[in-house]
Amino acid sequence: MSELTPKAALSDQDQLLRFGLASGKVRGVAVSVDHSWQTAGLHHDYPPAVAQLLGQCVVAALALVATLKFNGRLIMQFRGDGPVKLLVVQARSDLTYRVTAQWTQDLNPTDLNQTLQTLFGLTPANPGHLTLTLEPNEGTRYQSLVPIEGDSVAQALEGYFQQSEQLPTRLVLVADGGRAVGVLIQQVPGEGGTAMVRAANAEADFDHLSIMMDTLLTSNGLVEVQATAVPVLLHRLFHQDSLVLTQVNSVGFFCGCSRDGVGVMLKSLGRDELACALHDSEVPGYVSVRCEFCGAQYNFDAVDVEHLLQTHSFAPNEDIRH
Ligand SMILES: [Zn+2]
Image 1 (cartoon, rainbow, N blue to C red):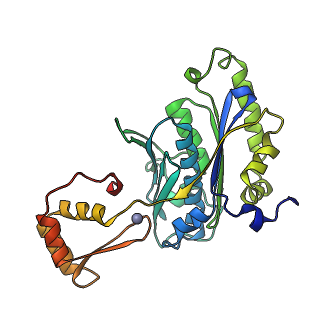
Image 2: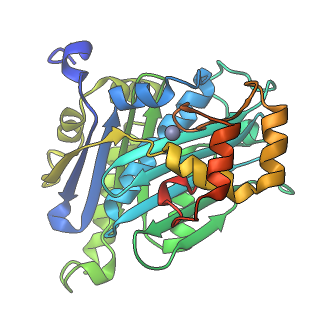
Image 3: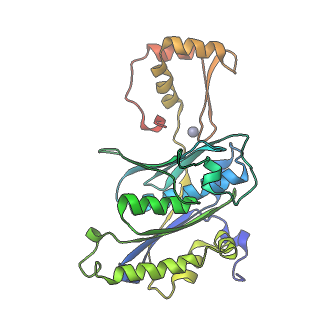
């Protein structure tokens, strides 16, 4: 660790690295979010327990979207009925993201060792659900939903891949309110490789690399992941496994909400609903909408509302689909 002074070395570490291992039989993605993650949290005041969960989901969603060959966005949603109700991460193929979460007063805000069962109030009768939605810019939307299984975000996603995709996948995810880091490795799907790649060795290689990932899952290991620049971490983990960095990209927070988009949503509510909203508004005289992702506030007075109702519909803006 002596080669790193955390502040200096970790500044501007909003980046995603794609890499190959074991002569291409295993692919990986490592991602860290830092400034962008602090920006995403600015208007939310996430308790530490929520910031930990949500940060893990952010780096996981970015890693997953980076493994997909598509243009559009991936939406990862955990929903339960406990102290935490909802986590949503939207990660786009341009590697921007936005997040939101809902939790209650019942949450123990500072205990960072709570399981997903505790946080989401999961029981056999009420297992919550993990939903992954792919929304290509063009083409058909794809959604799959599984019960939340495992104690952690990483375990729940590994279970998802086992069930839904039959793709052996390992994830290490760490996060706090300041920084989140994720490492994903995945066996290359059969159709993506040559016959050689699909040879029997692939599984043994993957198992060996999984054991390397496991070495991070001690309390010291996780602290190290949190405090280490991603390229350094990959080198430490995999330098003996023919690690090849294939691509480095920056990642960033981007909400994409707009006054026009909010206007389209309001118009869809209709005249009566908007009249009530004007009447009952917390901001007297305005229909006031706060973006749940970035905290931006959009106010429409009675004249604005009338203007919305009288203008022709325009095509729904994708940015307002929440
Ligand atoms: Zn917004």
